[in-house]
Length: 454
Image (cartoon, rainbow, N blue to C red; front, side, top):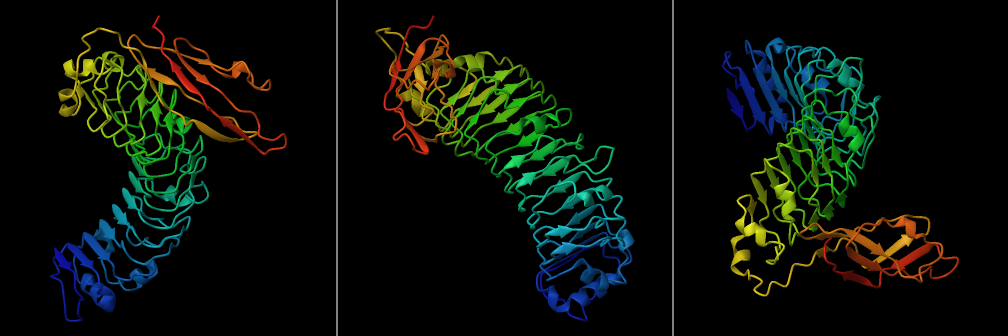
């Protein structure tokens, strides 16, 4: 192997038997000399030319007429200045298995850009300027019939359009797709059509405000790992993740706006083993029935959230559960968390129990409401909004909503879903002026009345 991190001079030569060449930085001063040196190698296998001020693939090819490209399995031209990839740019490199074009300035890729790369298994386009994932813009994928891993991380993609990855009748062989650190705000229902072999999908650090449920279900037979860390969801509602039968690992960490995980958020995930919900600083409530038909889950991580308590029914309902990590949460030591001290499943900072006091008087354990909405909302007149009231308690408390008798006649009480037990009373003010464009509804009274569980 020859590794160079300094300028290569005209009289520098590699041993003809060298198989791996890695040149990084400053080689733009003698780029032709580098390629002449590579040209004398009998059977080069790996070639890396990072930070060499390569502007076009054509420039690379013109400087490398003598290179035996038929033996090169891996080419890395990352951290250069390539702005586009033209048709059949790599046609001389038919043996390539890995092509790295990361951290260039690529904005466009021609339809037949990768023509001739029939054996290419990994393509890395991290850190470029690709902005569109539509069927027309992704036609270059069609030539890569052996591709197993595609990395589009840290580009400018903002929408995953329907059939964006579908370019032929037969399913793509792609197994790992990385779309993290983009600007994705919307995933259309058919965005992943044609990707029936994908086992790992990264959608982390994007701008998603809801889970793309329908799109993900299209991957149900193959998807084993899903990373949605660092998005902008404020809640996980019923059926946020459902019917993903192959899913083993689900990552939902570091979402600063996530406030609660509702009942049946995770449904029919028969292979699920681990859920990560750590570092969600606003997360105050995880419903006792968040998991439905998830028989193999062993680990749930909730470290570093804002949880003051978790219902013990959550743990008792999951018979395979071995660990619930609740460290670095503001756990209140009271009747709602007393069970955790005796549990061999929950992990809580030890200092919490040192401050714990039993209830000698046996005065009972009223439910505790999780505050999940602000006391004041400013809502457009034509908009709808949702208010959520959830409570921790044993036996399981239920929730009813009561409205003041002076409620505006235009507001129907049937719009509020009714349950039983813990009552959240909400008063609403009317429109400020008859022609106001904004309906200001202030919940000036939020009274929580605790009732004995039925």
